[in-house]
Image 1 (cartoon, rainbow, N blue to C red):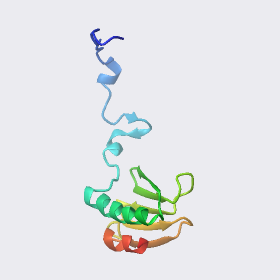
Image 2 (image 1 turned 180 degrees about the horizontal axis):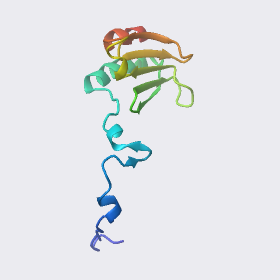
Image 3 (image 1 turned 45 degrees about the vertical axis):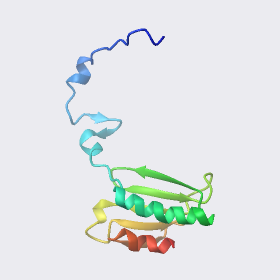
Image 4 (image 1 turned 90 degrees about the vertical axis):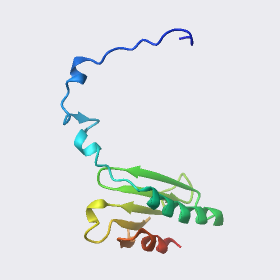
Length: 125
């Protein structure tokens, strides 16, 4: 297609236009899709500050972020080809009990759990 040809827009099919809001999208109901757990900007800045210090020291090299309806996970790697050394997890359903934030080691052991992210991240220092 050249840059001078017009783009042809097609109307939605009747099935998509009239689908109810609770219809599954990629295996999840649309009501669940809006409730995905995520880190706020301040929380992500705090995590990345600790991560940046460790990268500067040469201890960590890579990270990944995963979001699901149950929890948000920031995984920290020594090398990209390995399993994560630590994961920082935010699980909103535990916010009123043990605390929404936790740091989990490679072995699966929870190193620290709490309501305040800064205190939980202190275990990584």
